[in-house]
Image (tube, rainbow, N blue to C red):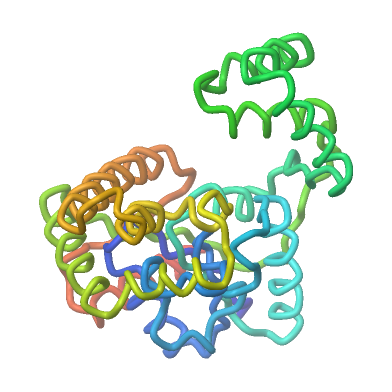
Length: 297
């Protein structure tokens, strides 16, 4: 029987990692991380990295100061899948970055590689010099549709859109080996998600999340580093610099995480071919449902 490629999806704190680990144990499968911020070294507690990190590929592959594009992640993942298929092994992809999984499974053709570092530096230096409004105007001149999709009040996204407009992607599909493919999801209710997010936040703080942020600062990682866009890191940074009380930071982190989970649920409603599993079922029952879905392929 052909090996399987299975994505385990769901909003944050839904239990994706536990199910992915169990499926990999059952099938002898390789595990691939699909959480954008778990790709960063040193961001461990605050991104809820798996306990058995050594099992996961595409974990800890970037420094917090480096960019990671969807296109780069897809290319890295695709190479792993090609190796696994030749080995006759299944692969479980788990994580909350829905665009990564969709781009990989749907073989997106328009995942652009970023411009080279010199070109990117020139674009950003120009953007800093002329201001956000002129950058947005230039984007509208080059790509009106992209300008309609981006929030002009978000200068980071406007600059990225301009980079793509100046360096348009090559229309080349990213074909995958002929795995039996399935996308599975664990989707707790919003109320349950909030309870789980709150409990996880308390656990993260007890495990030393604030100290983790302190170590990043001491290493010289700047507050605006790409990796520190992960929820909670800049809030705790403000605590360390005396701009925010820890209790206020907890409220902000909880609110941002719940809102993020809401956006993830919205994304999942439009995910092609998604097969929800019973969230509150026992682990063995969830594994059984996953295997039943694969028998249909």
